[in-house]
Amino acid sequence: MKHDHNADTPSVAQSLAEWALSIRSADVPEACIQQAKLLLLDSVACAIAGGVEPVCKNVVAICEEVGAAGPCTIIGRARQVDIPHAILANGAQVRVLDLNDYVVIPGTNGPEIGGHPSDNIPVALAVGEARNRSGRDILASIAVGYEVFGRLKTLMDRKGAWDGSSISGFVAPVMAGRLMDMSVERLTHALALAGVRASSPALVRQGGISAAKSIANAMVAQSAVEATLLAERGVTGPVAILEHPRGVRSVFPKGDILETLMAPFPEQSYVMQSNVKAYPCVATGQSSAAAAIKIHGMLGGRVDTIKRIEIVMVDHHFVRHQQIDPSRARPRSRESADHSFQYITAVALTDGTLGPAQYEGERWLDPKITALIDKMEMTTDPDLTGRAPGTYPSVVRVHDTSGKIYAVEQLVPPGYSRGGIAEADVLDKFKSITDSVTSDKRDRIIAAGLKFDRTADPTEFCASLRP
Image 1: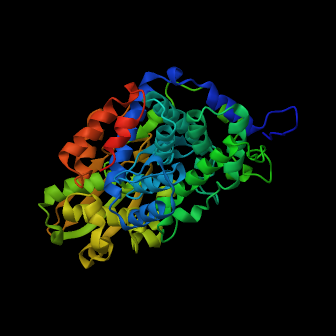
Image 2 (image 1 turned 135 degrees about the vertical axis):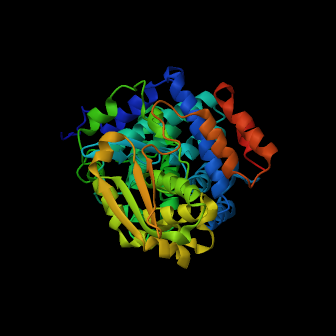
Image 3 (image 1 turned 120 degrees about the vertical axis):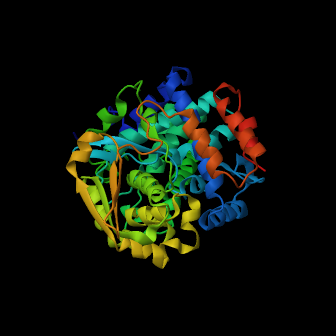
């Protein structure tokens, strides 16, 4: 349905601003607050683990070099900076390992990846710290931001020209505007200004895949919050940005945008649909990795006896596309390796695990790994969709030289949640991927995080993130 803007009709941006500001922190369901708290801890763990990656070291160095001294924490660093540079630095660290949360939403022909809404948790953390907001206010902002993210995601064409990080140009102002106590008018212009710079091309996550995959969302969020700060001072933007044919309507072409965005905040909101990743790889490859790790144990690590490998996955158009993409079958970068079903499975079969260490030393070029990739057959099975609705199941079969077959059917990947993330899953993951800090440091972060919803300000939690 076309939304015509005139002087008597609120723009979509104004309607979104009104909706976002109408939800009081106290009204956000307790289950959503608890889920947001666990997702905050999971994101911090991803940032600590990702902070040692070269791309993050470069991003953080630039943020410390050009960013002004300010009130905001860069995770793992002593120096505090301004809001936009904290968002860029932390956004890159959270995202770089492809280990932060993911959402699966129902699609026409099966499950669809609903993106990584935790990419924008650094927005709520930075603005909340700068404006000294309560833990619950920050967590409520995260939950509302997740809901906007999910709704806009359903309006995008997965096969279109725009990347999902474009959504964050509108999510970030919603999160920030709530924490800044903005008026509807100022938040409307924040959304309009942010939308001018929001659209990211789908190329950032296709082909050979560059480091832009790791920082695209952080760059969009940084720009969007800068726009929000400008709007707070009265700078205006084109308020018809979301519905005008020369705005960003082509980024969100599916469905009725106003009807989609204005639905009431539900009990089972988008934040409740989030899942924790067990492995630093694409969400659609989590089950294959888990199955391969189990087969490693069955083989006793004897991968030299492998003759043939079958990988059977859910029959979905974008899974099929990922299977046949030559740049993923033969990855040439860290970013393409973690999106390669072939590499993920081969290295998990070889090592019996899949973590950040499996991407060190350009392992994807190892002849032992490429030899296993040459033995792989990728197929799909429509039956898997019905047997494991809402997720990405996988069956891995390994045939050895003696004729024996080792098979594992992984219908649900580790960390997948049907009714809320398990606290134990988050804490186990936190401890397993943050060995760059001391156990005492981990314990302090976890303790501060678990009581974050009951704190009057973010001081203790943010302090625990600094050396």
